[in-house]
Length: 351
Length: 233
Image (cartoon, rainbow over all chains, first blue to last red):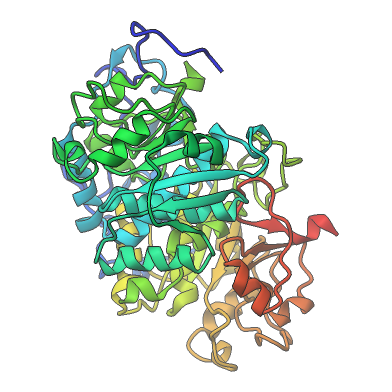
């Protein structure tokens, strides 16, 4: 691990491919003018491409698949053109140039030269809104995905064998809103991963979903502290690390000085590592912090927020793998490569 | 209410997709041992395109298939879904929308000529009928699909229960999957499973439930959500 960097170290950034190099999406079958407003497969229309022959009109042994010349079917897996001569179905072997499914080949991501702007508060909210409303993700789904990813990041930042204490204890401090719920799910997954999380969740939400997350943790026998000691040495001695799930990107400026102020004042003085979920609590989502907590590890959800530029800790993970490609493109997220089936990637490792 | 009555979708269900992922790259082991051999790593696929056909039935097993397909897409596979009998359940419709918005194609019909399937895809995910299916459902509306699947020559991955099998007694003349992914814990019919790999996706099940039902789960390496039972034999 690198030593604590000085103030002049640049935080990890996303690189953006310049306009001429940007990997173009293959035009969709039924969209007339390119992919400005790509058509979607509507529920009532199972065939993804309007130029596909209808099933009745197909003939011959190879007639099930459309001819790739009439439809860019090379982007539709399992629907490769057959040439219409009945010679059988097989992949036409078209190259990747026209591929519609973006492949994780790494090209066009690291070769860019421009610096990508991280998400503003408005953009972060817009992405979440789009996932919930347009993509029909459930809030329970999203929080579960994020909480699981945060737990995986914690296991990478603090592998079990590396923990200094005899017991693999972790303190998870949960705020009253969504960031806190993500912390609850993170704690549950840490328990599954054989850590020993303890939760401090002083201001419980009345939201039924968050109450369910709380119940899931309670039924996993995860202890809930009734109060957070103000003497930080007690925290330093009892835990290996603290997960900061107090305030997230949705927090209003100044919330760090409100009811959560006492918690944040304590966290500011702990000597054990802090892992912040999405935004270091108390920081302004865009401007960052002046005198707030200094986490060692940051786990950005979906994509880094602008305040991540001011992150000076040792590891910065991004948990954005599940974000659909069209959303990534719309908001120019230009995400990094994720190895294997990993849901988080360590940005600092690839520098 | 619906969203909360199901087990956490992401935690439980992407484990199915994880059993098919690329295992070629060295993974950070965190001291937990060797990289497990997954069923169909990307580099091992015979076809040029990493195509997978996901056949989804009308009930929960089908919904699990939808989520599996979406995660396969995230893992850089090219899934195609066949989902003939769409549920009206709002949760399942949301899963469908999520797949559609990820540009996963939906077939309008399943060809009865199995050679077309054999040629186009590397594997088939069978998410037609699950443990909740009634005995004989395999002979009902899904019979045609299962008859086709019985004759495909490419590997079949069954989710939880090979479709058409009796959950406890197993099958007599039904499909023979190559890979079985048992959800939470193997069902009794898994005793009759003769394929090459049997995964269990049960890591998220709370300890008290495991103890109460005497699940006696295996060890899961690292942060993996599935474990290959056949590998530890």
